[in-house]
Image (tube, rainbow, N blue to C red; front, side, top):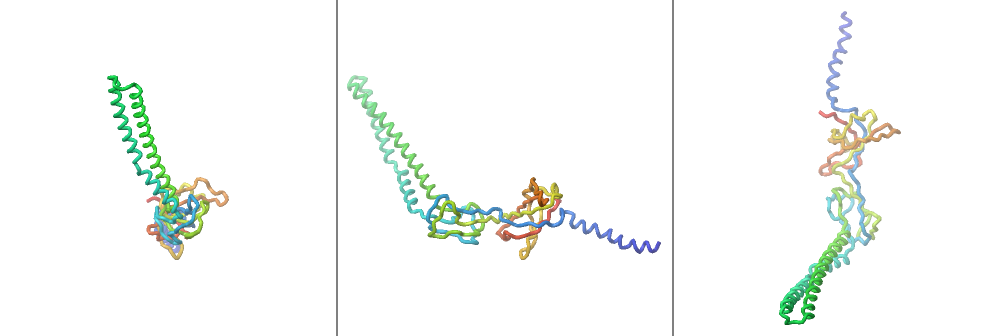
Length: 277
C-alpha cells in the first residue's frame, strides 16, 4: 500500500497542472497557422488619354492621400479651351438683345392690334407686326439654347482638362514610378503603382478540419516575423466556401488595422484564431 501512494504522487500533481495550461490556451482555435501580410489593394495608376508628362509629383516611398495629384500631362491647349468656353458661357449679350427685340416687337404688335380694331392700319401691317413678335420670341428661345450649349461646352472642356491630371483614388504608399517629366504617357501604360496598407490584408490557409470553427467576424492575433514582431489584433472578413482539394486547405482572409502605416506589407506571419469570449 505504501508503494502505491509513492507512485500516485506525480500523477496527482500532473492532474492539477494540466487544467492550468489548458485554461491559458482555452480561447485559441488550433495552433498558429502560417500567414502572409499583404496590401489591401495594389493599383497601377495610368492616364485615360495619352500625352506628354509635364510633371510627376511623387516618387517611390511617398505617402499619398485620396485625391492627391500624382502627375499632370501637358495641358496648355486644354487650358485655353476652358478659358474660351467660359467666356462664351458667361456672355449673355445675345440673350439680352433677343429679350429686348421681343419686348419691342410685342409692344408693336399690341399697338397694331388695337389700331386694326378701329381700321386705322391695314391688315397686312398688323399681320407683319404679329409675325415679327413671333420671330422675336423664337430668337429668344434660340439665344437661351445657345447659352445652355455654351455652358455644356464649358463642362466638357473642364472634363477634358481634368483628365490630364492624374490623382490617387486611395490612401496609400507609392511603391513604383515608371515614368518621369518629359516622357510620353500612353493610355495603355501605368505611371505609378500605389499600395493601400491601412488596413492590411492577412491571407492564411488552414486545414479542412477548421471549417465551421473559423467564422467571419472572429478575432485573431497576428504575429509578424522578425524584425517587426509583436502581436496585432485582426478580424476575419472572408472564409472561402470553395476548398482547395490538392492541398486540403481553406482560404481565410483577415483585416488588420495599420494606423500610421506602422506595419509594412509583404511580411510572413503566424495567426492564432480566438474563440469568442
